[in-house]
Every structure is written in structure tokens, then in C-alpha cells.
Image 1: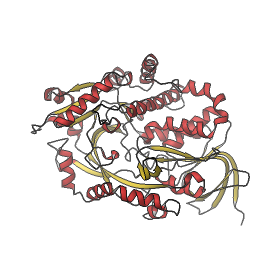
Image 2: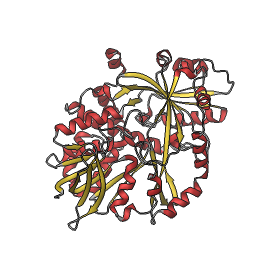
Image 3: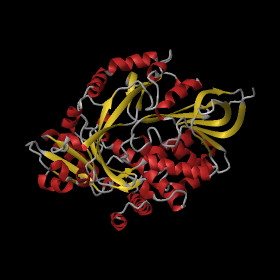
Image 4: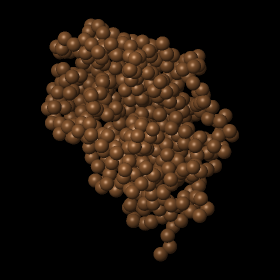
Length: 500
């Protein structure tokens, strides 16, 4: 029996936000290149990118307290917050370019304006929040941020959170109106519709079995058609592995030296979803609290207004948990089978180091509904159990690798691993993930196509005007870009009032 074998320029594995972004960038930069996408599930954006599987914050560090740690001298380190905010601005610019050029339509289906808030209780936390506010509000990227420790003012901002609050603890919040809610599932679907119109071949229900280097230096990808059982081979000069939690096992199959000494630690999550329209109507913001001691950064509690299927909803969470699966649709053997001779010591070292985290995750798994309600009532004192359902969020796989901080260090973030010759790259890690997809995919282009960057740069700058420029150091450019992207994406308050 003959086995089908075809050649192409680029193969993207996984139909999530990352592949959608890279495919869309490449179609603008090298329209003649042939691109194929293989996705195990039945459609795009079904795993980590799905709107029910991530927080959709449009991470711009406006409210995430873990991006602004307090240093030993008591000052606030805002470097990560500035970096993440600048990266999100790149995403806004690229989406605006696509909308402006009619390549994707109806931005309100995937992005909506929404205040971002941080809320803390207790004297020490209030002092920290005030210092954070002072450190950020001098920065052009965080202009318009307000701080209040007046309960009357907070009642105006978040009536649902302040109603019925009996604690005498000091309480404070910051609020900034330039935040957004992003439906990454809807965005991913829009981008794949655009790619199909650009003649990108997208194959759903196709599972990648192996990736091997050919003698000419290309990559031979073995793909199984899940429906028919047929095996196909596709050869490409460049492969991108953007399969969420499934990226690590595929990266290991490539055998590249860069894939060694890397492990993955899966963390699952649950969200509580409000089903009472009266309660949903009383809240309009994303409100982030402070992570509990011993909790990983992705377990920061937050109460989020979300816009899903053009309908306002309210989510609280996430409650972390542990599952050995690397994907929501994965296998219970994922974690065990990811342990290889070259990463076993890295994994063991992480196990020893992260005992606190393991204990925390076990406690979270054991939480009853009533216990979850207790945590919710720290945000909404009058919350009623009958108003809330629980949904399972997406799986996240945190990267474990050997760093200067020692063997088996757990990484919180997103990273690109690529072969020395740039012929293959994989995306690993979690938050801020999808929000910074454009920045991350530009990094992939720089690492994997250095020979093209000079000719591509004018086009990149047309799509993303702040490419290669620090917006923090160029406040006029930031103002100009922020105003134009708000207009194109329909994020100005005036436009929203007209729409509603």
C-alpha cells in the first residue's frame, strides 16, 4: 500500500491562537509560501485558546499583582508589568491592522473594553497596592489608573463586592478603564477563517504521530487522519509546534538538543460561573486579588466580567487542581510518558523543590463546593450557592528546566524553544500566553527566519508600528497607537455606548 507523502513550506501543529497568529503573520510577509495546519480536534481554538479555558484578560499587567513584586528594600519592581503591557500593545496593533484591511471583521466579537482592577484587604496589602499605584501611575502605559481606599468610592466601582461586607480590615483598589476582555476562542476562529481564504490548508481531526529530520535537513511529519485511520507523511522546511500542553511530547520526538533537560508540570483549573442575570448585571470589571501564600501565580483569584457569544457573563476562579493530562482532551499517561532519561533529574529536582506547590494543588483538588463558595464570598460576601455552577478550565503545562536558579526550576511564563538552525520551533508554557501571541510569534520569526527579517521589516512595521521601539520611552507614539487601536477595535467608551 502506498503511503501519501507531500512537500510544503511550513507546517503548523495545533489550531490555537499561536498557530493562527504565526500563520497570519507569514501570509502577510511571504504570501507565496504554502502552509499546512494539523489539528487533532474537530475545530480551531478548542483547547487552551477556547474562551471557557482561559481568563481572556488581555493580559496587559493593569491588574495582575504578581507582575509587580515588592523588592527587599520595599520598592516595587515594575519591569515585568511594563514588558507585558508593551507586548499586549503589539497584539492590539496587529489585530487593528487585520480589521483595517478587512482581513477579519467585527472586532467586538473578540475584544471588549472593560475596567481592570486590583483589590486587596489588610494594612500590609493596602500599603503595597498604594506603592504599586504610585510606581505605575507615573508611567505612560498606565495613565488613567486610579487608587482608592474609601469604601464609599469602592461601592461605586464594585457594588457587588462591597455589598454586605462586614470586615473591619482596611480595603483598597486600583481601577483603570483602558483594560479589555478578549475572547481568544472567537479570535482564533476568525483568524482561521481568514487563513482558509488565503488558501492555507487546515486539517482537523489529524493527529501528529512523529517528527523526524530528513537527510536534507527538512522535517518529515507523520500524521494520522483520525476519521479514516490513514497515515500520511508531510515534509516541510519549517515546523512550528503550537499544540498547547501537547507541545512538549512533540518537541521531545524531534530529538533536537534544545529539547533535552526540559520537563512539564500540568496544572488544571476550575472556574465558577454565575447563572443569575441580576447578579451578572451588578458587576462590570475584571478584579484581581492577591495569590494566597504557596499558590502559583496562575492561581491568583479574580472575579471577571466576560463577553462570551456576545453575552455578558461572570466568572470567578481559578481553583487550581492536578491532573496528569497535558491537555484537557489528553491522556492520564501524559506526565509519566514525558519523563525521559535526559530530563528525569530535572523533573525529580523540581519535585523536591515544589513540595509546597504540590501540597497546595492537592488541597485545591480536595475543595468541596461549599469551600469554593467561602473563597468566592471573600469577593462577593452575599454570594448564594444556587447562583453558581462550576466549569472545568483548560490544562496548563508549566515548563521545568535547569536555570541559573538551579536544577529543575519551575518557569511561570511562555517560552519558545527552537533548533539552532531555526528549522523547527515549539511554544511551551502558560500565562500570559495568548495575550502576547504577536510578540511571541515575532520572536519565532526572528529566531527562525533571521535571513528574511531585513526584507520583512518594512511590512512588519506597517502591521505593528511600534515593532522594535519601546513605547514606555516614546509616550507620544504610545498615545497615537493606543488611540488608533481603540478606534479601530471599537474600544472607546463613546463607541460602546452607541453600540449598546
